[in-house]
Length: 503
Ligand code: GLA
Image (cartoon, rainbow, N blue to C red; front, side):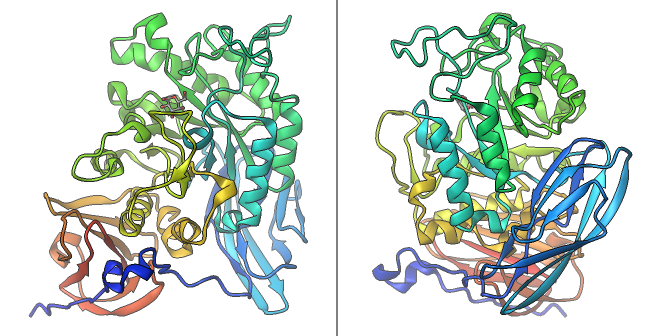
């Protein structure tokens, strides 16, 4: 007999106006807890940097057993650096972290081989807050904030520069209107970036990673210098500067080349993918061509680690629902294409204080998304194994925003080593249900209420392909919420979510 099991999750909006932005997640305790991915890919003989994401009161003393000899640990900071071993191989490293409140250990599988991004990349990108208002200083401050806010302790690691770091020929600003390349043809940053190598050194000194951006076209989307016919020298320059990720944004390539066939769309990405692969540095490759030519079908073949599946989230029109939903629905439909090393990218997380993509000169403002919508956004991105890049103002992170961005159990679903994207269980006017199988045999389920009223949403074991009794974990509250057999169901607030893990 199927036992109908009812899980009661209080709709946050039922808690009253003073609780409009309820913090659902308990704060991490003072004892150390090691977080971050359980599996990590790097190529042989390349520079290596990794900050062991760990919450708990500082100082913490770190140790690591089983590290390859070419990688050393800074025991006070918990930062690994050095070079990966010259040959492919697997290392099971045991991290330990200890402070005056306790001690924790966790295994970390370092897979030295051809694959990078075995779990989705996490970090911050400047675009949706700062647009063309960027300087070297801003990225140093973002790296500082990633550390001081605690985001780095949950695994956020990339500090990524988007468009507008290069020169711009049609600008009246003398710091932008400079020769785009030096005598050897190497690209030059504009006058707001005096020394790119010094900037990545600064980011790396915190154990974090640095991302950069260019276009295969002559100009970027914001009309700065692009890499057209300079692909190799630019990639080499980015590696020499010390960047760890490249976002490659189609933009004016469309005007210059007018690609039509899939082959023509593939070409610029294939070229850059090959160049990156031959570099003596691991650079994650993020394809940004807005989902044209069914990029998800060929991006892994051109060594893309992630690919944007849609247009810009910040420009997406709200329907009855905020824009992230329609982007999310389209990205969710591509679940079969995601796998370790290769991820669908539905664009950044736009919460907290954020700029306006349609009116880029307007001062950044607090998001108009409700608390429930923000929980839904982060849950959906986590279930879709999406790259988790925050793109709000790092200098104005508030407690609620950090609570949404930094829930270790929610992030664990995103970073799960099995690397499967959630499958769509149901999509109607009122309900959206996603289920993501996890490495330990459990299943993460998101019950999203798309309607304007609180609503009971359920998913059956037949739909979820489950058998037997399961323990239900409420991931936002990090609480066990009883057992279920045959069906799980929850009362979900308007535009809210019940995000559950069934063990
Ligand atoms: C495009 C991309 C955005 C951003 C801007 C920069 O619109 O899709 O993510 O990089 O260009 O100009």
